[in-house]
Length: 442
Image (cartoon, rainbow, N blue to C red; front, side, top):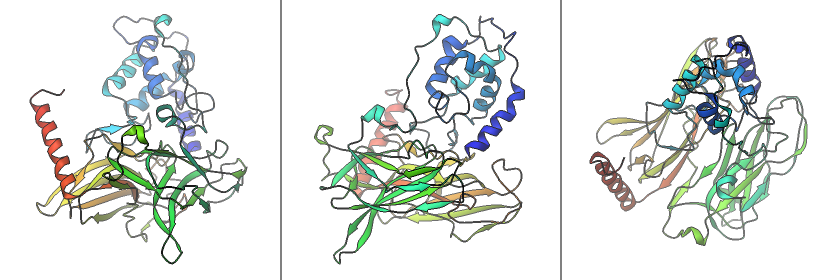
């Protein structure tokens, strides 16, 4: 996917004017030094720097200026930064939200229209350091992980078809803990060929058989990690194993003895967290694959739907759509049978398989779903030449595990509530909304 994105970027080079003659009149217009450099630094440089996945570096005016028209086009179309989540549908209060504000977009567009002036170099911000490929992204906030679990080594070839490595390893856990955050990290060497890496806990049942206990983590291109919300416990069981499902897609780089690592941060005493009173959270809703037997005809389109309900109230903490190359959009809704009302919770109308974001809702804005309500996941696919990411519109495409197959599921983190907790959360939100209406909160 990255190769295709680079080709798309380079094909737009015709949009780039020569540096010579760039306007330097700054009166009434944004400048790079004062405004644009800070937007680039906050939102772009983490990927667009030497050694990172961005196809060009944006660490200076000299590097950014040749790409200014293309940057303006991509941010105005909301293709960059890559965060496929609709701005006018569903819950808009998200953690780690990569979307640019309307003000930032307008600033970049105005800067380019003015000729992309540098401005006063004294206005430039200090350079910033970012995590490198192979470093924990959550470490900047949480410090290094408390616990590491590695897959067993696997030789990744330079060329070949999709392949899967599914080892089971000892978790190393001697006591049951509540997970505060979890992140899956592919090796720096195989970062480009690790399509996804899923992991789950295994425990022994009464007969001594190893059975699945619950989902641990999931990695795909672009994903940051998962943080457990306040008052919830995602359990890491003692004396357990971890089962891996690692999907490699060779990218021309052979990596011997490759390992994928899960990093876990635990709640501890200083967090003042009481696991006895916490609600259970899991990532178990790997769901709604449209039946798993669909076929998308050549030059055709398809929509799939799946549904799920609980016999108790739940809070949805995060939503991560997952489609492949023909997937173009996904939505998550909830249907309330008692009233017949249908509500869209989240939607991504410009899906890109190169970026798999877990959209984590802010505290107090996570969707609350009453017992018996139905969660509806809808996915749309485009197997025509109009889909720029479609490798071959002449092919029949079915559901499957390969990169060229399709998927239509979502990873959804759910906190399981009782009636008392559900009603308390509703009351807190009603009180907050009343304060906002009265102007107490801005």
